[in-house]
Image (cartoon, rainbow, N blue to C red; front, side, top):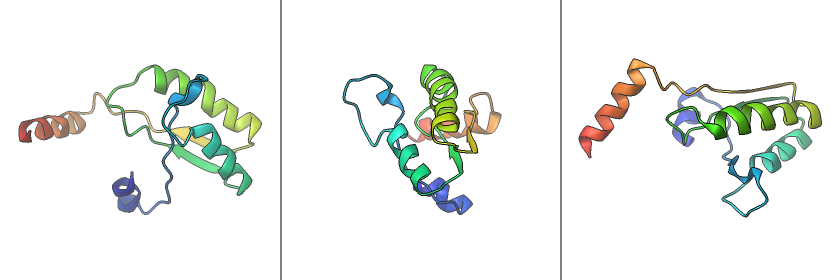
Length: 103
């Protein structure tokens, strides 16, 4: 996350969306982080699910159907979106191939 943010010169914070259920998981929780940002009058958020190499339940449902609408409605975050995972991008696949070759 630090490397990505530094490369594009953006502020960043790390959070986890896996805590949708009531069980204890890793943190900080994305909803708590969005609450904190809303209290600081942050009105634009880009979510980058850097831990995933393919779209899945946590990105397509948890983020797109639960977290983003909640942030817009409950926290009045005017602009919030998620970067789509480039699973079919040739450059991304080549990068993964190169990483695997080096192992």
